Amino acid sequence: MTTTTLTTPRPHARAREGGRRLGSHALLVVLALYFIIPIWWLVVAATKSTGSLFSSPAFWFDNPAAFFTNVAGLFEHQGGIYWQWLANSFVYAFTAGIGATVIAVLAGYGFAKYRFRGRGFVFGMILGSVMVPLTALVIPTFMLLSQYGLINTAWAVILPSLLNPFGVYLMRVYIQDAVPDELMEAARIDGAGEVKTFITIVVPLLKPAIVTVLLLSVVGTWNNFFLPLAVLTNPDLLPVTVGLNRWLALSNAGAGGEQVWNLITSGAFISVVPLLLSFLFLQRYWQGGLTIGSIK
Amino acid sequence: MTTHVIEAVDAPRRTRRSGIERRQQVGWLFITPFLIVFAVFLVFPLGYAFTMSLSSSTLAGGTQFVGADNYVKAFTDPLFLGGIRRVALFAIIMIPTQLGIAMLAALVIDSLSTWVSKLSRLLMFAPYAIPVVIGALMWSFLYSPRFGPAATLFDLVGLQTPNFLAAGSIFGSLVNVVTWQWSGYYMIVIYASLRAIDPAIYEAARIDGAGGLQIATRIKLPMISSSMVMVITFALIGTLQFFTEPTVLRSIASGSLPPEYTPNMYAYALAFSYSQFNYAATIAFSLGILVFIGSFGFLFLTRKQSGLK
Image 1 (spheres, rainbow over the protein chains, first blue to last red):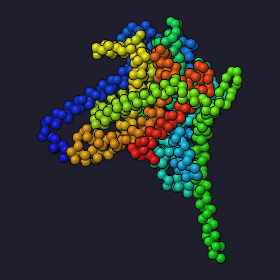
Image 2 (tube, rainbow over the protein chains, first blue to last red; image 1 turned 180 degrees about the vertical axis):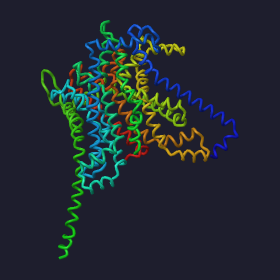
Image 3 (tube, each protein chain N blue to C red; image 1 turned 90 degrees about the vertical axis):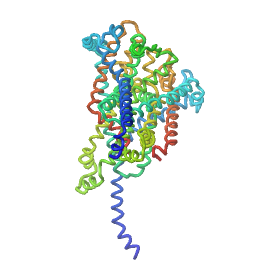
Image 4 (tube, helix red, strand yellow; image 1 turned 45 degrees about the vertical axis):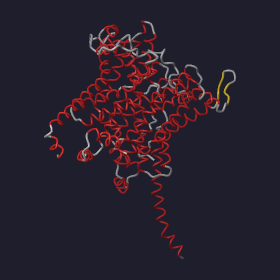
């Protein structure tokens, strides 16, 4: 209150303030352009034939109807394997994501609400493992899986993706604040067992954290590149990320017949649509993972 | 007589306490599924890689135990050391660049509440929703002189288009891809922790005569230092493992990006192009140890800021 009455009589300060606001806005516009232009390019490029990818202006539409030709091309090229890749990505991401979330909820609850012997040590070990670079595990995991004949199966991608120490950490932090001990005590006095208390009382309280961890795990598996690149060679099993990279490498190296630039751009665009939509509609949860982490 | 009485009083109490203790042990049941995954896909592969790194196999001689020989070889291997130096340089340049942009944007967005600031917050965060492979793939088109989108933009502002994929400029081109992909994420982390500050503190500072810039540097930055430490730690771990972006860009710039460009790429090439699995395991394990030491070292140095003990 005092500050406004102090500044109003001074037009200089006002003008300076206005200039600063303008400068701030200009900066934001420049930054926003830098971050959005590549995505805009992808939208435009998805609607172009290979010919117009080379010849027409890069950032504007040429003949948008070519998008449908491209989609038809995705159904024809190599027997429509693109859609198989997309389906694989969905199956891997959701199987591993749901599995990792269930495991993280159980473990987070165990750590948050029980004082069992060895708890501090085990949790410290898990926290430390967040520092272990997951890609350093890829080659050892490959060797391990090949011993058991699991290379070139969906399990080779799904099983290692169940490991999500950060999810356990997020769940523990969330459960500590969101589930009052008195509530659990009351349920126990009413005669509910530990498992029943967990399922009927605790889980319903965790909905926002569950959505966040599920989203992060699903997206994490969807985005994974190194692991599927190492453990899958059968083209029919690839997720869409590795598949598109294969097309890109072939197109850059190959002769005319293997150049499918228009299919790469439209395929890349179609594969990010579900992610961008979930990003727009589940924004709160995309950010939730960050804010849960920073509560502590 | 007295002991008898004490025992009688003590007995029920002891059973009740052990009942509570037994209930606390139920915690193990809840964490067991995670511990199984943890053992099978973290502890076991690490142990397995370590065992493999201690032996060497040749077609003629079979597998032989060689002790630390592979590690001596790795830490005198110019290809591995060159890769380590390169990712260290990436960390030194890339992390401050991303954090600088993220912090500037977060401070500006936090000080405004107009539709422009809300929209640009969303737009900056959007690249984070795009898989890293697809992001790198997009930039391989944007950089490509054959398709020329970057050339269009440089022409627009009247600048000469650099060759993004030449040996001398690929480093900067990779920094740009990563900055584009991750700055928005860091901006949101910083923004979220700025929002958590009680605005009454700003009021108090303003009454004491502090300006906008002073509030930003003297109050806001110190108060978000713990989330900054978390962000930098994750960025450090990610950068030292650099793999996806250079691998994707290799198909268009193989001349500038040798297969041993980063330690992870080197381990991949050793395993899958040269079938040197023992040496690949050594490289992967050494990298893992270096990242672990690096990130713990960083957390130790910043323990005051992060509040971790």
